[in-house]
Image 1 (cartoon, rainbow, N blue to C red):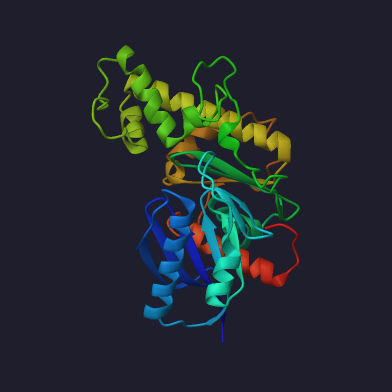
Image 2: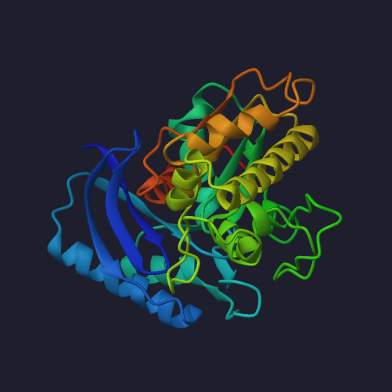
Length: 320
């Protein structure tokens, strides 16, 4: 019988549970509502979702474990979930709780770490053991894989690259306490905030800045292509910031490939423009390319949760 993993992806509005093979095939999946107002509630929602899935779904393979991707800071080696975000912390050993209840070994990872693991097993990682994964969506985060190992850090906090400063002269202050962080300019939320900030200087913009809705990235690039000057200012600023982030990570980690994920990167528009801001000397050793992931962003964390279990069951890595 084919070995499979019960994979779980905890998001802000949904929990996705599925049975996944080593090859990344999702045999079945179900969506459930999530609640991330506090960690204990989120953990109980995960348990409820797993219970329902196991009672309603026919398991097609031999389940060898449970893999869970969550938002926040995680220690995969022990299964501890420390915090959803700074200031919202209720440390618990979620992996141990799930192992006890469902009688299957369980491993836990951050969601961006999970995406990087999926990329490692199913994507660019099949070509190289050295790559950088950068997720640009509502926020920005990344992970570095070096010599086949995912870099974790002493406090399980490596990869928070959205807080890398790319503008020393900026007066925009980030939630992290610093000014000039790339997330302020190049994330989906950051671009919206920049559009609101500069709107007064561009009264003829076609962008609907006064709406209660966020100005979406797709609205921005459509306006950009129509030569809207506010959109061009905001998006060019974002492209330069993201390019600076990319080159900084290349200099630090010496990858053979850079892979982008996240909603901002989905249709390739942002990357096609970003590469024009890259310095050829800086990226000359990125011989395996700079690309958008080919993995479906809607299920990449689910596949990453499964990849985590297969990696840990094999037992040949210290970190995952």
